[in-house]
Image (cartoon, rainbow, N blue to C red; front, side):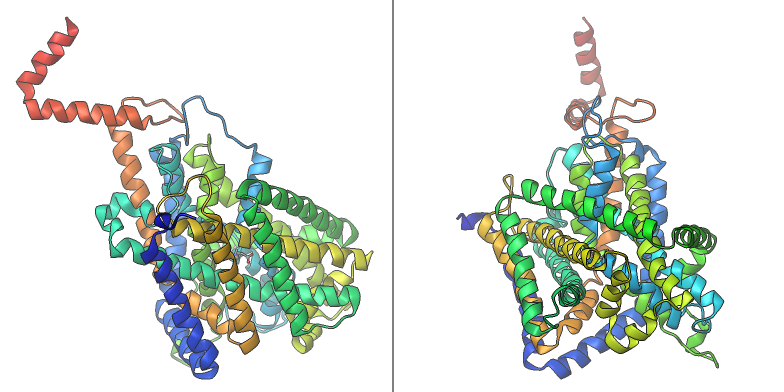
Length: 548
Ligand code: NM2
């Protein structure tokens, strides 16, 4: 156990920030909650529009990069082909970026919009229903995936072109802020990212655990108790601790393969045995509605409702802004994974692939699972909304799945899928948390360090679940993730600065996709510098000598 490898300021900084937020929540749950809620309200109402603008800005920026010279750079050597084929690449991408929350929201999000529709529409009307089946896809769609892709740009670029592995996000801002990275500013960037991720993952856990508990109750009838929820958390921790301990590659690969197969099975099963035509038609219709209203949705701020006789719904703050914030806190971590699996692709392929495959994946979950529930609601086969309002979302979700043929078996598959989804999210988060607090990562972060963060990830939400402060922690993390808005801008800027400088200095410029040989670039920069130092005349003679 090599303690010198640990970057203590970051390690202790993140831990202290975490304790600083959780300890008061345990000691004074009520006033703590009030304080955090006020802070959240302040950030989402005052800066909600900033979140929307940054989200849309990131989307445009990526499209621009994809079709610019910078987008033509290949992540690797000249003759390199993509390391993974598109199918496995898309599968891994999806499993890294998405956790059990897609099973939760994919199945039930529509029911919330049905009752509390956007654009001030009347609940339960024809329009409300149309938007109900569409808004979820937007919140898990192109802008969301663009937020995930942005940090992958500098990380992949430094990794494959400059051949410098970057595991810390502060390191990815070096081209912009230079040596400041090595001082407190760098530490602050990493600590904020870690805090955001801990809270974002806490949110995932807070949603996943009760849903799995309901599923197990439906399978066995043992009742949803605190003991059951605790056991589930312990089980999930054990799975990912073992997988973490046995090394990232083996553990995560096996789990995400199982995940992919089970997801495809679940979706195909519902598509075939559910109301197939309704599902396909509604999803197709949503795609059109979304495309038609993309800008309207991504900039909707409810401006007048704050003033005159209009009623304020708070929809943009509680949904779109919340979602962008949640994707943001996960983004640097997912970006790293996207970077890792993208060897041999061009930047353009990486960008367009992530946005389109990611959105397609979300569309499948929302279009199939969500519309399946919606269909039962509309036909009156099963009153989802009633169960949702009386018994809560986890129960409603499991009851929707229970309406399928082979009900017991399908709930079983659903529960296993949720458990594995949770475990993979935690496995990779603990890996990243551990890497960020190390000065250097040889192959894998130190094992004790990984386990430490694995348990921090689980124990903290567990404690808060008992005292009832978990929701507060989620909110706190969203507030704490606020600076990430600016860090994201820095990451994009850093990437542009580094890659544009390299492209300009490069002597090789192939059409279509080109690879930058950073070693050669550095050599030619050095040569140029020498020439300048010697003055143009000396350099000229030197060139002539070479020609002889
Ligand atoms: N996002 C995709 O819980 C999860 O599924 C992890 C959540 C950010 C909404 C990611």
